[in-house]
Image (cartoon, rainbow, N blue to C red):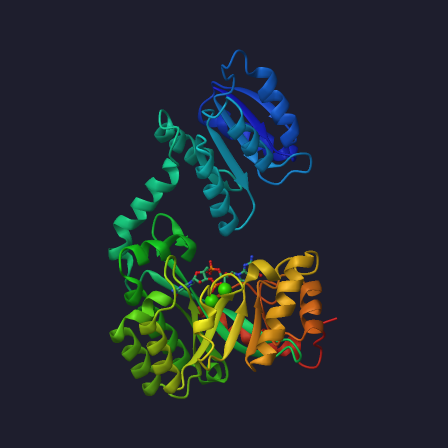
Length: 403
Ligand code: C2E
Ligand code: CA
Ligand code: CA
């Protein structure tokens, strides 16, 4: 194969080349260190509409023309059918976004891969992909594989709960933890919610997951009295509010463990707005002293006007607006106005996706109450939680600053 490898880091190009040669030696490599250099090479090598390259592997983030510039070029050129693999160190959400962009362009996308690239996986995907230029087969194949297992997987042994701290900005004190779920599949390791939640929702299994998660998290809180100082926040999707059985389950759980400060973080489900039935369920939860947080605020709640009569407790600003708050004026303005709104209606405001001290400082100046994000800690696996709390509290005593 004639393979074009595009990455601004020499060692990455070299390592991909070596991996190909170790697996299957018969290739011709051309390298480019930027998107623009790659586009020139593709142009020069496309003779009378015939593509020279059999595969293009391109990094997403480069200075002189990035991976998106290559995608854009291929979408507008005659070389639409050249198999393209994108590699990146971005998070899963960004990778998913890139997949969506590529599938919109009808390009021959082999896959979008997190670095370091596993050439073995890429070659497998390429075989599947050959002769199918229009669909993103990698995604679909993987999706149905997981779907096949999803019913079987949804049991207590496969569910692993991680907890991410919510920190009061003014004092640096831990106020609560958000439960983030991972499914553990023997062969594949941890599977993240971005992948399995849509499958669970499609299969109508959302409430089963919600019950399992709630049950496991409450058990952990019951086992350690120290955890009861902290709010336990569990994610639910708007979909779950349609199940009376689920709502009753949550209320019963809360009655059995009434000393746990239980909060539900509500996200609007895909293609589903908050309906009358959901509003009733929310009211029922609120009456029973279960705290409600509106998650991903700024991004979801297209029908926010219908929520204004509900005495919810917390607004969580979506991490996409928070992460680059210190360098993106538009995001800063959005965050500022959400905080102002929260103050007006007297609810706590949480910023998620706080990755740096600089963003934390800005949030403090804007009057945000609580922060959550990698700056404090990534989600922590349940068995390490008490150790983390001890360590954080012993370091934080008397030494906390946001500036
Ligand atoms: P979310 O509720 O918005 O959760 C925050 C997500 O941001 C988590 O991703 C977390 O790991 C990630 N995150 C935390 N701090 C940072 C940071 O500083 N920077 C960046 N870039 N990301 C950060 P995760 O665990 O992959 O969860 C993704 C989404 O899946 C969650 O978004 C939540 O909506 C959903 N989810 C997770 N667990 C459950 C669950 O048990 N049930 C339901 N229904 N949804 C869940
Ligand atoms: Ca959440
Ligand atoms: Ca969120």
